[in-house]
Image (cartoon, rainbow, N blue to C red; front, side, top):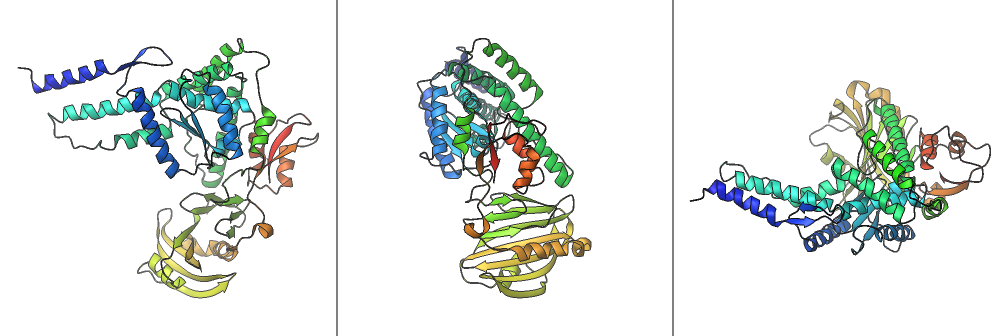
Length: 487
């Protein structure tokens, strides 16, 4: 009689034998536990979830329509032209793009902003189309399911807890965060193949690679300038990793010999598509303008003293005094009933003594302020200047804090930040930073352009403007060239 272990191994072998399919790209047999019908259904399911959880720009937005036009052109010459491809723009500043099974492609506005030609856009979309045509998500799903099956077989003999029930959720997370290096490299090569067939300039891939490297360098400079430490760097589509760079350059060189000299670049078309869109966060998310934070949707603003570095996230607005242990957080609390600012602060700092407690009215807000001793992760024993600004059902909670022994050193800054909190009006206070087109003149340089707009992007505005236009700080476009500026 066959043992239970032998039966289990035979079952695995049978599944492996019966689950082979021809890969649309390599034409080789792949071991996959998913039919094309299941692949398309999985893509539709995840796409519905993404639509619920991510801020997607509407399909009739001009920028989305432009992305779709370019994407459909590239998809039509791919290895799976029979699929219906769906191209979406995520209204977020992240430098990224990703693909779901079955042809659902997503590109972030933050990455679009950095592009300087239609061929660069085609290259990124071609990369994501490559993930779809090579069925990378299906292969990842099979790996995950294989791991799950292996655990099930092992659990017959060993008391292993069932900890892999959410494998599909893990797969979705993996897809959005990026595939493995082998898959990314294959998609790089497929992108170059597809955009060449679609009539785009394949050299756009290397130009975009250089832009991403510049952005990476600026992020490192900013992080070191703020905290003294380098940040984590994402290595996904068109990673600037040396191995990827060399492979892409080799693939581009091979394609260049077969490409027409009339290959489309589309510099002006790409810039025209970006004209007027926010450079950073959208008005719905709030935006950083120099040392100010504006939130048009909520109708509030704040201003920070010199040398404070501001960061806006979906969870909170944070700031830090450059290379010092002095911090700030702004959070919004929705109230279910009318309460005083003192009640809000007492609930926030339970069982803590509120010192120097006082309430006043300022600009339509009821403002309550106190000083509290507590603890905080970054500083340990902390002293906090806490402010609750109430208007209607919204309570804006501002907390500035440092080590207790250093509090008086930073108190003037803390109080200045709290006093700056007030209502926002677009006519009086200006719009969020947006992309505008400008014709380069002889004598221009990036530092002078940055100074003209009061270093709107912060300490490294000149570096960012140069990178925004695909250049280093010491490079300049020819006179008469249309470029992007931010104002």
